[in-house]
Amino acid sequence: PEEGDEDLEAVGPPSEGRLAPQSLPCARWDLGYEDPPQEGREEGPRLRLRQQIADSGLGQLVSDTRFMSEAALKRFLLSLVAAAEGCAAPPEDPEEDGPAAFALSCGEQVAAAVQRLLGQGSGRTDGPVSAASACWLEMLLVDVALRNRDRFQAVWALLRSHYLATLQSPSAKLSYCTERRVVGLLKLATRMLSREHLTASILQLLGQLFAPGAGETDEPAGPGLGLTQRGPLRALSNQVSAGMWALLTLNVELLPRLPLELWQTIFGVVAVCGACEEGFAAVKAFEVMAWLLHEPRLLAKVPVFCILAVRPLLANQAAPTSVSQGAVHLLSHLHSRLEVLIKDDEATDREMDEEPEGEQGSGEDGDTPVLWESCWLPILRLLAEGTSDPRPAVRALCVQALLGAVQDRHLAAVPVGVLLDVLGDILGPATQRLAFLARSSQASSEPPPSPREGEDSEGWTAVHSPATPPAPAVATPSEELQQASLCIAALGELLLRFLPRLAPYPSFDKLWLRLLDLLGSLLGSCSNDEAADSEDDELAALARQWLRRLLGALVSGGVIRKREGLALVTRESLLQVRGGPGLAEELMNTF
Image (cartoon, rainbow, N blue to C red; front, top):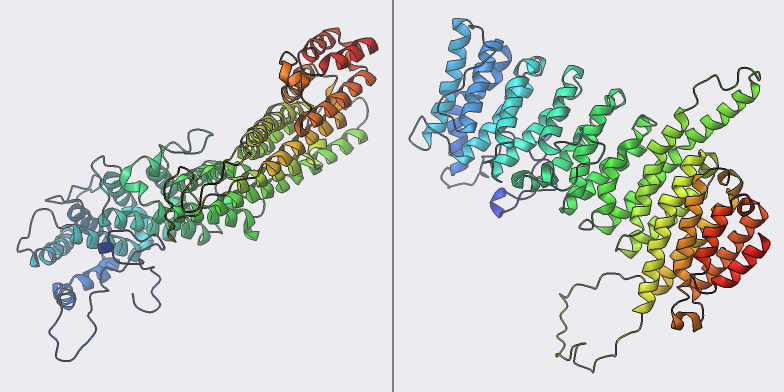
C-alpha cells in the first residue's frame, strides 16, 4: 500500500500455501499491481491489469458512489455481491420500492462496468467469476461501503446477508476468498462499531459467525463451537483474534456503554480464539483480555464474568505456557478488583450499627452472598482447576494464586455459606488432587538403570540429533510434595480460624467428614498390615499432626459434645485409619 495507508498488509503472499496470521490484511483493490520500473522492459501483467482497471472507468465510478442516490448505491452493491457470490444476475433488493429511472440507469452503468472489467481477461461477460476476481470484488465491496459511511445503515442489511450467506454456508471452503470476506467484515466492524445504532447488530453478527451459542449460556464457547467447529473459519482464528484486538482498542470510548449481553458476545469470540490450537490466536486473545482488564479508561467497566474468556487461555495446553501463566495473573488481578465487595460489607455493617434497634433488618441484605457466589467463587474454582494442569509451571502458579486468594482478608468477609463452599468444594478437592499427585510422583521417582554408552534406555543405539526437541519440563517430587503440604496446612489453618463461625451451621458436619476422609486417605487404612507397620512419610506425618489439632479444637470448643451423631461417625472413621484407634480412644474418653 501507499505510504500512510491505514490498511495492514499480509506477511507473505497467499500463494505460499498459508494465510498470514501476523496482521489483519485488507489491501486496497486498486493498488499493488505495479511492477518496478525498469528500462527496456515490456509492461508486466500487473501493470496491464492496472491499465485495464483505469480504462474501465471503475475507479471513477467507485469514487462517485458518494454522490449516488441510495437506490443506485444499493444496485451497485447488489451487482458486486452477485458477482462475488458467483450469481449470474444480481438478486432483487427486497426493500427496493421502485427507484427512479435515473438511479436504475446509474446502477446498471456501474454493474456493466464491473462485468466488462471481469470479462476482459477471460473472454466472457457472464457467469461466475474466477476466485481471484471474487477476492478483488470483496475488497472493492468494503471500499465502497466505507466511502459511504454516512449512508452505511442503508446498505448494512445487504452486507450482513452477504456475509451470513457466504461464511455460514455448509459448502464454504478455506480459501483466500474466505479470508478476504472475514478480514473485510472485521474491517467494517472496526470502522463502524462507534455508530451506536449499529453496535448491537455488528457484534451480534460477529458472535453468530465466530462464536454461536456463546450468548445463550453461562459457559464459554469451547471446542465444537464457532471457529473450532467450522473447518474454514477454524484456520482463520489468527485473523479473527487480530481483528478483535483492533476492534476493541480503536473503539475504547464505546465499551463502557455496552450492555452485558454484548460484553458476553465479545467474551465468547475471544474465548473461542483462546481455545484454538493456533499459538498466535491464543496469544492475541490473551493480549485482548489483558488490555481490557488494565486499560485505565475501562477501570471497573469490564464485567467480572470476563472469566469466561480467561478459562480457555488457562486450559489450552496447545498454546505457549506463558499464555496460561498470564491467565493465572489475570485471575489474580480479578481477585484484587473484588476489594469493593469487602468495603461494601464493612459500610453495610456500620450502617446496621447506626440504625435504631427497631429498624435493623428492614433492608434487603440478600444481594451480598449472590455477588460473592457469582463474582468471587468462579475465580477460585478456575484456580483450583489449574492445580491439576499437567504443566508444572502452570500448576505451581495456580497453587500459589489459590492459596494467596483464600488466605487474605477476602475470606474473612464472605458469608458463611460461601465460606463452606470454598473449604469443602474448592480447596478440599484441590488438596486431594495434589496429595495424590505427590504420592504418585514419589512412587515413580526411582530412576531407571542408566543405559550403556552409545545405547538408549531400550538397548537401541542412540542417535544424537541437534534437531531433537527438548523434553517437557517435569516437576520434581519435592516440588509436588511441597505444594500438597502447603494446601493441607492452609486447609487446617482456615478451619481452625473460622471454626466459631462454621460450627453452628448444619453444613459443617459435611465439611468435617470430608476433611476427615481426606486426612484418613493420607494416613492409610489400618487393615493393611504393611501400612500399619510402616513409618509415616511426610504427608502422613503432616496429616496426623493436623488431625490431632483439629480434633482437639472440636473437643475444646464443645462441638463434639453438642453433636453425638457427629462424634460417633468421627469415631468410626478414626477406627479405619492407621493410628486412628488411639485418637478415637482419646476422643471418646474426653466425650
